[in-house]
Image 1 (cartoon, rainbow, N blue to C red):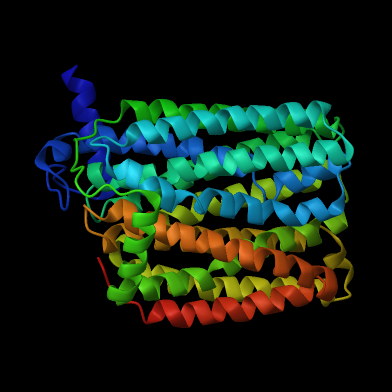
Image 2: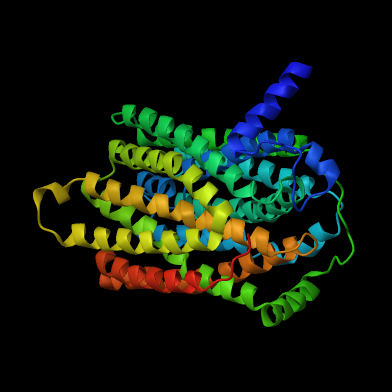
Length: 437
């Protein structure tokens, strides 16, 4: 038994660049002793979660699903707002419940199991759903999936803050993103082989693998060794809202972070419109979807470890640079759509732009996650994360609908110009954030 333990510790030290795995910041001594083991459990859990997120993506896979089953086109515009807002809005309401538990991983496990069940339901709808009713059921299941995602999200960050030390969290999320990118790449390659197969079967297979990914996430979460934390200060939903509003007034860095994060929504909102431009060239052929899945996997595999290490050094700089990259990606997408050249009439130019936006969106996610975890203290971390996510969910609902209406009126290329300007404002906002590492 000693040999595996030594190997695990050495591998942990190699992955993190930490010459002494017993050196810890911001976590108890008991958690420090278990950090190498917990690091790999977090890594495997995050791999399952990130792979499932890609294979059940509201930005790419679910629009294709609605098209295959013949759902009305207006439903496509609801996918991203439902997916993002549904995952974010309830988090402030469960923050008090989680705060009252000495161990929070059980909430994470419940969320993972529920996500696995909803992904399995989507797989069944890919096989048996059809028309408006099928599309409506997809949206309803997506609501349940998003709520379960919100349950897991806040617990995941809180458990990470208790079990993984500062200046190791970004590295952990970076390596998990890289592994998930490699797995997504393999899934996209298989999907391209299904080009002449029934679309329903291929999509059901993808969503079935997503269900297995979330099951892996729940299993690994259940095995994490979590040191019981403080339970004082647990609040009901309305008390949490009042406390959260007070934090926004008193903590200027937290308020400024939420402003930058709101502007960074442009990176999430741009992705489905670039995918839409690619779909217009590829039609409903699964080879086009496979190409987008592959470039998404390659981009995530290459970008996440780099962003992760940079986030451990300065997460605000990562947010700034990712916002600038979003600006460039949106401008390129609009340019290709308006450029009347033969090579822009294929899926590949948009696949390359999609890859760029996946890279910078990974930076946005890693930067903001690392920033909020490092900004908050151990006792208030769950509340900070929940409040920030709830505010973003409100904004996603408030902005997502009007953005979709603008796309219907202006067209996707013009909308990408609007999102490019928003991303540029996000870069300016992130640049003025204080350092927290």
